[in-house]
Length: 405
Image (cartoon, rainbow, N blue to C red; front, top):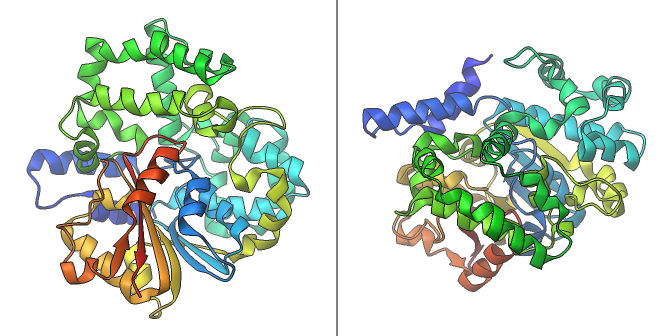
């Protein structure tokens, strides 16, 4: 069972036409990517929903990742969301989220399960309410053990967001910071944006000037924990030292949005969501959205599949909205052409495509044939605005394309 997801991920990531060193790095990333990577997705669903302008009855195709955005989109009342992922752990997490949303008895228990995700009561709730409604594959995943022998479901009792590849990377970043006498959690004490900037400029920014940090971040494997493969590393760097790029992205995360409104900052600096009723949360966990998300959770279909293959099996003119996260950064020209050929074939009038890139510019010009790209209108000004307002602050660009009449 383990070899199949490895094969699919490797097929998506490994550049077979690259030099041997690059292929080895790609294979190392594929191996690292086989387990749980994102317990918390790092794309802003509020920006997504504004850009996508989801209308009642729309059919959406999206990459699942951690599922936060998949279930948040339900607030906009689409008819169906088809969520695909090559990572079996992400598929299992999405199945768990759907069952928990549908079966846990109230919002308090749902909030405790996913917003807190560090309470032993979650394990009892899993067995009583969720487990009987999980498919067998997902149940075996959650009741199985990880590489260090821990039962995966117990992550919901001990801090789910400290696990997975990204959670471990953030934990390592906290450890390295403490070794340099920097406490990243201090940021959570800020009461205003002005205080946030003061803490960043005096405590965090100088960290990226240290020789060790600059050397480490110049290694392509150093960002595997962020889910960034070697091919995407080069796009993210853009010819600059990676330490400078990371400092700029962290500055946006730390300084551009009020802390009480940015759960991405809480994940980075606190390794979880904030506590209390007023804490910033993804839309699917907010109390005001509980009833509609629960009622519509059955509209989400999860598939362990490649996006292009899923679309190739779909009927013409069968989707209204597409979300690719940053997956295109990994793709060759041939893969991009095949994906966008299927998108164009399956797109209904007015269809919208949203994706992110590590670099700032859109990656499609010069890589798709003019006849294919010419079917789509790139909303450059809107895309710049969405990029500016994306609270996760990781990506260089958020890009919106709309099918021309």
